[in-house]
Image (cartoon, rainbow, N blue to C red; front, side, top):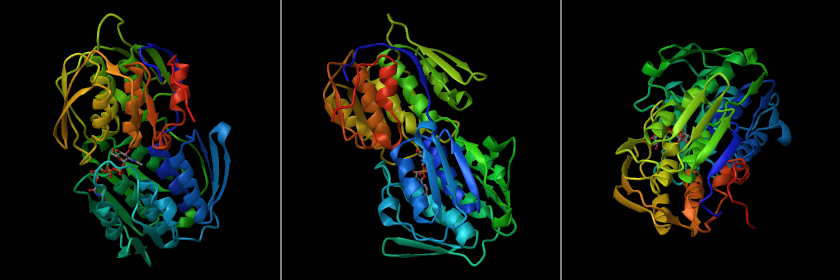
Amino acid sequence: MEGGKRLAGTVRVQGSKNAALPVLAASVLIPGTCVFKNVPYITDINCMENLLQSTGADLEKKEAAHALRINAVNIQEYRLPAKYVSAMRSSVVLMGALLGRLGEAIVDYPGGCVIGERPIDLHLFGLEKLGAQIWTDKNRIHAYADELRGALICFPFPSVGATQNTILAAVTARGTTVIKNAAREPEVTALCDFLNKAGACIEIGHDFIATGRIVIRGVEVSCLHGVEYEIIPDRIVAGTYLFAALGAGGSITLENAPVAQLRSVCALIRRMGAEVVPDEEKNRIWVSTDKNRRIQNIPFVETGVYPEFPTDLQSLLLACACVSEGELTIKERIFSSRFKVVEELVRMGADIETLDNKCVRVRGVEKLTGRTVIAQELRGGAALVIAGLAAEGITRVTDIRYIKRGYQDIVGDLKGLGARISYVD
Ligand code: UD1
């Protein structure tokens, strides 16, 4: 990409990766056919499709229409192939779904992006509370249950994946499960909405954000049925393009944007000096920067669980902060080491000081310089693209396979907004 060009125009936000993965995994619980719409075509979804097929589910996809039909009537395989499990951490949510449907699951320790320690103790804690027996054999985890039973489960930390896994196992458990301190992320609510449409009985109260309380009344597998379900838009992709507009400058409109989920992000962007107009009715967000005034860094931002500032947008904010005026300290509170991108940004001329593995301080510079930089993980890779748009000269981002895990067509989307960017072989 060649930086220095202001962005203009409209971009449609793709379906959410993090909402789609658990919802697709949930389809193995259902002895019927589900049709999913607004499915993002990204490599993590391909990986989930392969995993679902390995259980015996029949898949039919219409890529152009972003539609996927999954028939899980005849699934019987509870051992997941190591090559897909090790490629993607979210494969672990299939454990809860397979336990609920077949009473057994065997998976390898999951892989995923290298963003610090990612244990799965809380996933296993939730499943064990529901009565699953869990043991490990070398790198494989076995989970087995003659019968899952409803339980009271209080999470010490509101892990997104562990909450989803526990919900999936609890849907067909005998009796009632109460989860306390569940993750409040919209991708958890979306999973519950999908399961309820398919015949589950899950209650999320109006005070969910305050309490993190979910009540699941177990139903028989035979009560679950196929449904048509539209995947919610991706708040992280939407946030990426908002930060692209801040980094490169310009005026852009996001369509199909999850406006309510981006309140804290919009508020932050406004504090940095951009104009933001969210339109909840039309699912649109318009953002605009002043040609004659640089974006301002604010002193301090920390990541947190929803509805706080999302960890997945931390590196995108960091990329913008590199070319904004003033200083910003960012504290990462969710993952133990999520600053891998710093080294590459510094090679482009950014002034970033690592205070410890949870905190960095950025002093904005006038310009970054285009370079060849290496994507090392999904969101950090996208951050390098944003940095490239804000840099002088040509930037090449290599190893974009990481970016393709979560972005359907980041290059096409940014090109549509007027960026000088293309894929190279
Ligand atoms: C999900 C998202 C990811 C996002 C993260 C936090 C998906 C596919 N991925 O990841 O993009 O960055 O939420 O919003 O939806 N932890 C434990 N033990 C566990 C599980 C988690 O200690 O058993 C820790 C993790 O190491 C991490 C923190 O809890 O430090 C948050 O992890 P979690 O909320 O589980 O994130 P994921 O579900 O992995």
